Image (tube, rainbow, N blue to C red; front, side, top):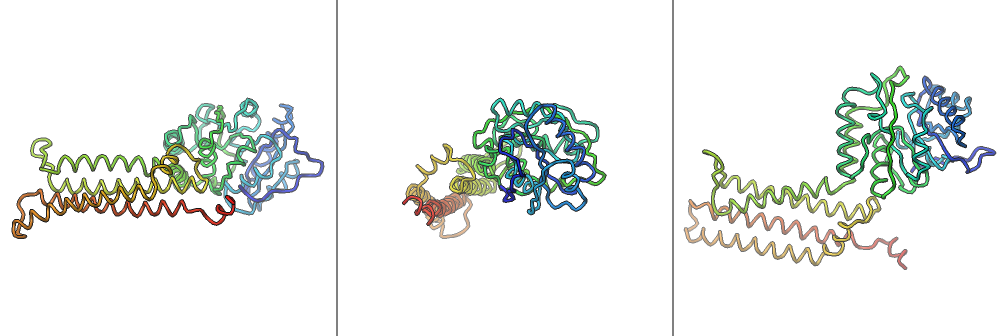
Length: 403
């Protein structure tokens, strides 16, 4: 999280129930109406709360406007949407925090569903703009029908989260629960990190309808469609090694291995004049090697992520640490290499019997390719085994802690 903790205002106590947090970067056109709506909600709902502005370097008078209305302002020097929110969360005094953009696109006067869901025991309450209603012109066509639905689907698929609007900017949460996650991204992907890390940490997540209207600014929004969309997608994939490495690796390994096994001893007629022969066999071996590489990357990524605390230790991690020892993997790689040498030796023997001349029978060629493929896989696996061992070596800090 951010490091912009500020001193509490004079007379302020920690007994606040709610902080309404708004990140701000030159929002003079809309900051006042957002603060007034938030303050009206706090008064109407009779909640002991505050409005907190996390300013990210405004130069248009936004800070002065906010302070004049009685909102508390915290300065966050580190640039970025995520950095501003992290700093605001650190400085918040409420047990619960509801965050939303200060562009008047979200309705801060109707936060009752969020408060009710938080009081019911949820750690994170997401708004769903698709269920609550999106006004005409509030969301670009590409975002509404491609970007948000696709990224939300990927998020649900990768992290098994029943959330329909993965990137809604209006959301509420228990401050201590989110701070314990130690979120670290500073850009727009902070929104994805909050949801994914909450799911991986088994926090209780709920979703409530909310509305979205066109923002009240005359300038373009800070969001950049392709850049920020890619950053969200990259974040989702990097935090799920199974979908980034393991599942594709299994697919390629099984597909390539089966195809190579079928084509090992001769061509296969598929349909009509289409025949899968030696070239297809070579391609299948290459695909198998690629799959093995992805599986190795997945195992390494999972071990490093759990070791660093980025991902929780789950069943796959325990299996890796129990079975995937340096000794076991190195032994497996040895037998794999030996089998590859045997296949190559058989092919070499057949070639020798022909006087090292032209080979009309494609079997020796296939045996040669299969042998070298197995040797390549075994060498990679062996080096991965030692890398697993290096990762498991206790650091100086860990050794000190264990003593």
